[in-house]
Length: 337
Length: 265
Image (tube, rainbow over all chains, first blue to last red; front, side):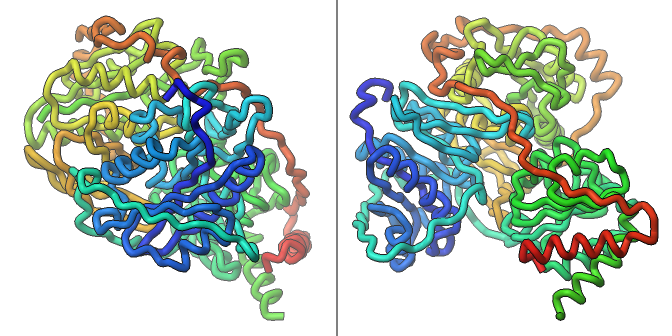
């Protein structure tokens, strides 16, 4: 695909569905995609694979910014399976020759996109937080955190088309409905030969603890300074008052005070809630990498030099065991007033 | 069961320097370790060999000094290792890296599984595992948190996704990428360390793996790093010190006001 770079045009997103309903990441990608398409003076298309996808949701993709929606719907596309999804996406890339294809940096996007990029001979950049167009060339400028978020790197794909990127979930707001938008829904048939899979999904087991850390608006996170497992209850009370999900530093997980799904940081989850309240977390660089893009950060720590204060908007240097009960109580009061 | 484990040597600390011109990492003078998630891949591979017999082969693409990562893999219990090292490999992005690893794996003859860490801590892309699978035309099962059952022709795995885990039956050969939940990596044994010191680790070049030169290194990489910069610190921390009991209430009040202003309460 190196040759005839100029034959490629249009911005495409990969919308995702679960149980036939379009997922939030799709609308975040529409925000990104609309911006890129407008800068490039071209159309935005959402492609989506699934089975019996809710028709109103497909129309909603148009209402929220897509000029066109291209679907492939088959029983075998109901859930993500890398081989059929890749075959379908490659077919679309071949037929429509998009200039830009973006997907969410989700478990689906981060598996499918590299599989497709190899076969499409395309450049792919992982987990971007900023996307822009270079005016002179039309190249996609892809900016992503690297080395644990210590640096940002801007990457481009000068010769190969399409230019592909995955975009970090929650790194932008989902697109909202605009009045009077129209667009076309194209329902493509996926040829049977594309639907073969050497992977069979036999079951799905939902997470037992619905703590919803990844999608939470408010997260109360706890670090080693909480000293022992029993003290986690203090964090739970605070989280309850704030309707918050609970997160943890690696130290807390390694000590078994909370389990791995709670871990925030380089080797755990990367999140960017509206409020991240860090309690007794020193702020190792690996931890910061997982939360420093949060909208507002509050830190409570007894060490005035703790690194967490460097990324915080508000900090209290104090004994957390003195602060926590008072804070939970005061929030409870304030909420009932 | 013949299992190939591609591993990566990464800088130990996060105090990494970048070459501002090429956008690549300056690796000189930085302590290097095996990428932490690769240890889980090695562990699972060794466990499977212990249960089913066979061999575990670690491979790594990198500069000559990456051989130390392979020796550590041997010390943990891998049977043999191959280093893929050639000046032509330098500056590879994930496309060109996946290509070299896939070509090397092809040269190794038949195998049942390729087991990788889900991502490396330096690049943090998670693209090379699926990339290898794509080049080899194999299925890839990513984010594997549990290996439930393995036989000659297939395996049952748990794939950790956003809100739960998928149970997958995967035909072999296949590429699997591991996350932390899958196992506890073992430490090298004394016997393993001694073996690791003595073992001959062959070095394969572009020629040995019959690679197309135009698919290697920076030349073969579709992407270019054009700018490296430090994130701007935009936060001004309003910091209150309340080490004294008497002002705890006051500090909490200020925090509550702050949270109210931002509509969190």
